[in-house]
Image 1 (cartoon, rainbow, N blue to C red):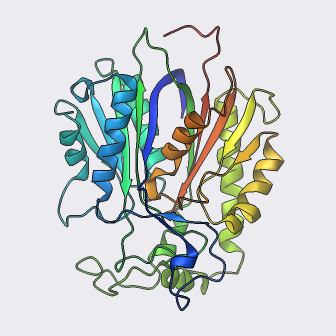
Image 2: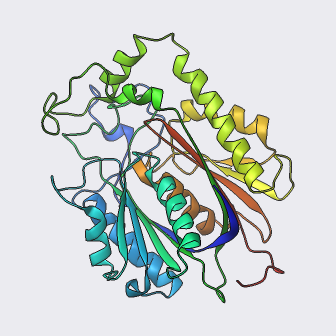
Image 3: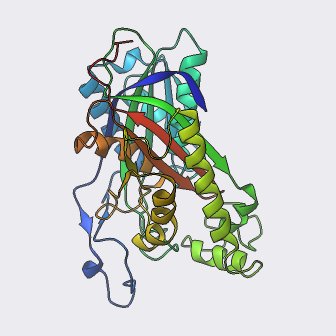
Length: 345
């Protein structure tokens, strides 16, 4: 989605629980042989939407905004939100005082945060009367319904809330410019998280604990061993190439200095993402996920927050921020640090 003009990112924050669960904390009988992370962020009581509210409050405070000034609130998640028949987007909007905003739930699994940023940017550019938006995400992968370390292949799951503030107003100085969000999908892979299971009438009807490994095994029995890997390589290549094109960049542009990787298992990053990034760009890959885990729908927003917190971009420099989720969908956002000579829109 190339934007006719960049959209201002006024804040990007995450709220990570203080508790970190390390592999050594696990019972040896269930400890993964190859954890892939030094620790996972674990919420002991707060739900995903409650974590999102905390991140949203932090973002509003950083920008000096009031929730009542928001025209749009997009909220994304990938796992259970705490109530069975409910709109978490409306809960987050209410708790942030955004009672005149349009709350919109975005359900694209772990790529939902990227889809929400893309949706909000397009909405702001296409709706002249709406100039401020908040994108929030929140996920908590609590036991016993979800085995955060061993319930899936290639990823372990941490808890977090995130928030990003976008604006198309004039007269504001952004923290970052958002130039584009490119997205590609492979719907033929949806069965990786469905497997051979029949549709059930209620959540966790077939299994008391979500078992993504079981559905992936069922899917992989039907296809050659490298079927998914081949599609992943093509789609990651496509989404990075499209994002660079839409932003008017080449992979060797000296202004492009960072590529923020998804918070996946280091094995997945080393075998799939790092080689592709190295072949397509001269930018340095950045991995923020070793002591947090994969943050569900929040990886992209958390990556933006860490870019800012770590001051990794100098004025005029660009970064790619990658995201992916089952379905399957891949996104790549292109952002830049405002140059000293950039006009204030």
